[in-house]
Length: 210
Image (cartoon, rainbow, N blue to C red; front, side, top):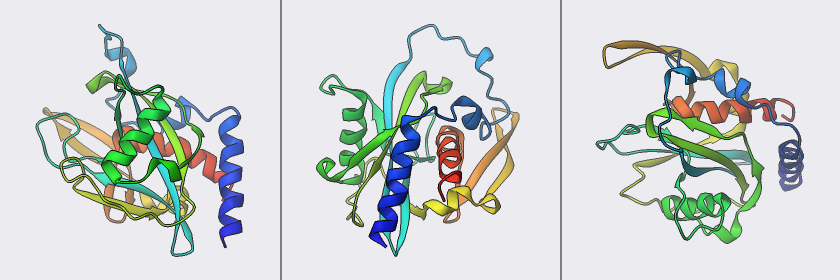
């Protein structure tokens, strides 16, 4: 079974070196109010990185998300990948993704094999440009989540990403505006916004492999 995992991981690695599905794939899971032309960038976007962490569990490859706690901010209570803003000590955005994964999930960065990146995604509400990295751990990790940042971790098999029955569109109300919001439903959790858009591009890659 481990050999099968390695074949899938090697196929993902190869796909990441080729032309990526890009913004077209991301936009499939974008809320209808999201229109890049409506946002003015007065400042250069802040650079950040996230990690799509893959690992075997119960004889299936899994991916990990987490639930943010409620706080006074634009991403309060949302589902996310581990990651965050680049810091001065980070020599690269890959270093940012690894550092944040270690801080938020308690995962030793030395055991993560970085396979490559997906397409950068601009998040207007926080003026953030996110680079998504995909990493692989050869064994089921022991999570030690950072309590201040992580309410709980959500683990789901990667096969769920390409399961069309786990996608839906809900109407959300924010600031008296109705927004049609595409989302994935993994482990009874609603994954939408930038996290869903990043997942959508990964879905295209997995669809050619699984």
